[in-house]
Figure (tube, one colour):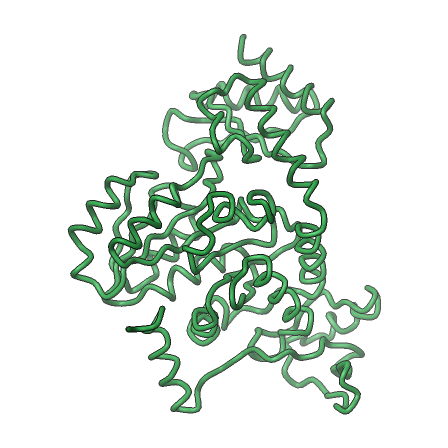
Length: 388
């Protein structure tokens, strides 16, 4: 019986045979000027760094000004931009996601576009949700696989496409956001997993808006919907609930090794800065150690939906901290957003082409930092404006 992701194993094995396999090695961060400070292993001598792209020495200079953290990593991860802290963050993410491994990207956009472009290959088929984030869409476009876009959350169409096309392709990938950022709704992950099992397909999910918020452990919508063990590859961002900057892919070791060796946005991008990595480590630890934060934001999101009479949103999605208030017309949406600013609130007006024509909206993003009095005041303002 073939092992999972056997097609990735085969290509990686060929690299090993050719002595071309690459892995990430932790390189101590740039310290005093061009030197690399010695690691915790005292048996190793300090190294003079001739691998960094810190051409003016500014990252090294700033190192001493910021409690030992450099502003820039200085190089791509495979050169010398990968540090002990990068490695530590990867392990924290893998532990949170309960996967074998994780790898970091300089942004969530790079993680999504890179994974979607690299993993599906020539001879494969991608089925992509119509309202996926632009980063997933761009990655699918770059992939050598064939692509079909299916209507938003349309399980029946996905099943028809699988029935009609599965036998023609080596692998079929179902690629979707878990939480859709403009609507605050969930992908039908359990049903997609059922179809993937039935037709031997692979589900790849972007958890950008769910990581840290949904799930009993805070790991995202796959945990929230009890399909975490059924979706092997999960993408996330460090820039939303984690409160830092960057992105990640978590999954089986073979998938992570494959990305390290073949994913261009990972290989050819400067690694995320040490400051961002330190912030992300704190953020992931907060997800694990401070569950009251996600409980608070989820309760606030549910309260806003209930108070605004958004009964069509009072579902398993009611605790998602993205609350869209559909206004419809662009002009009216902008007018309410302007009045909100005058009243002391920033509520962005989202218009086409970001959302479909006729669905311009106010997009409320709820935070654990919002107080009940602030939320009450926003609700009162919106009710008044929407009546007029």
